[in-house]
Length: 259
Image (cartoon, rainbow, N blue to C red; front, side, top):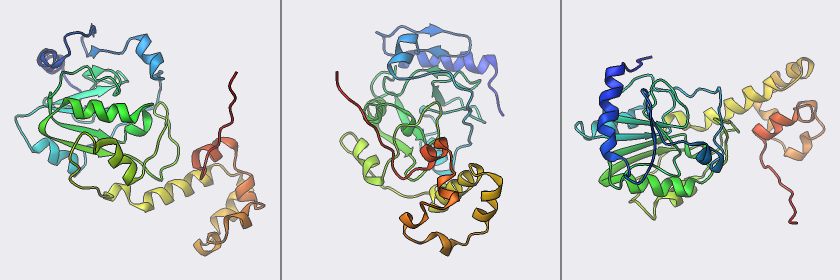
């Protein structure tokens, strides 16, 4: 992990202040600029978590960063970056060593047309209002600036710190096409269906008691291609605990009433 030195951080934070909305108050820490007061945390359901998201950039993120070597870029929901880059503003709700600015994606603290590119990599499923996030990301992009955004579709529930929305390709397009010109949509290699399948099967197996697990692991693919209702009385179905059903379920239901 390439943790930033104090000198690197101080230099970047000094440059960043010219991009901050003048009307906003923030705390100047040694390690970051903090736009995440308790009021904002409560408003958007931000709470402390021990979960750590730390992934290197893929080739498509690197292409965006290379598109303008002299530019400045926003990594919106960056996680704990294994490489600290001077031309990338690491924006997070968690105070990692590599975090430059603390805040929420629904209320970015930057002036309009600030960034030559924005990365939003497996983040928008974790925010309460992805429509507002998309509007904010678009607002801070410079004219001609590039967006690279990845979201899950068939991924199981995973809370960092919470998980609200998965999206179809049409849903993701719907977030941005009123603000930006959509250049293309693809399923990248790390998002192919095999990742969904293996994630579900591994997690399913982890939720089963030992005696049922053996039978489950000995099943063949063809054994799982029947009508779903025909499996409802099978132990590998009804012995999954409630938390696994919420993680892997095909649907989730809610009941409510108004007083």
